[in-house]
Image 1 (cartoon, rainbow, N blue to C red):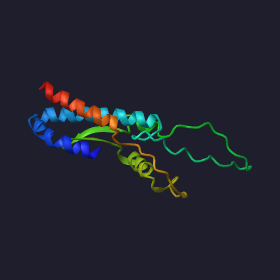
Image 2 (cartoon, rainbow, N blue to C red):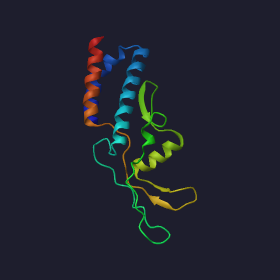
Image 3 (tube, rainbow, N blue to C red):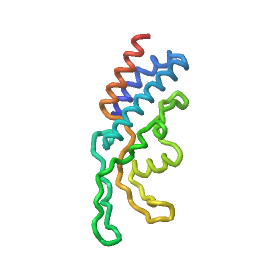
Image 4 (cartoon, one colour):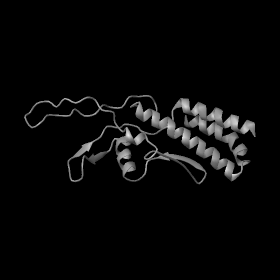
Length: 154
């Protein structure tokens, strides 16, 4: 995927340089919004950008009487997919999609599978990696077609 972008960038850059700053910013914002929608859909579907399903939630454990807690399976990160937390913006001419603040810290722990405390002052836990953000092969193809059609229309 990175090789495709590098090959595309070689001959696409002179065409993009012809765009005004406002046109380049508008194009980058459109791409960022589309990438945000794509990543929000993968979060809601409970799988990573590559299509691989996430590791399931940890078993709920036992209650005070020692009996297994039975809970209906709950979706993870349902609120993270909303536009309040998952932001699409343009920074310095680049399309950026990501999380900020406290949400960003929590998302980073889950995305990379880091060690973090379950609650402040509580025990630490090694979270399994659950990739939240990324670019799929399908999106790469759509992005290439979109750029070419946008530049051809000019």
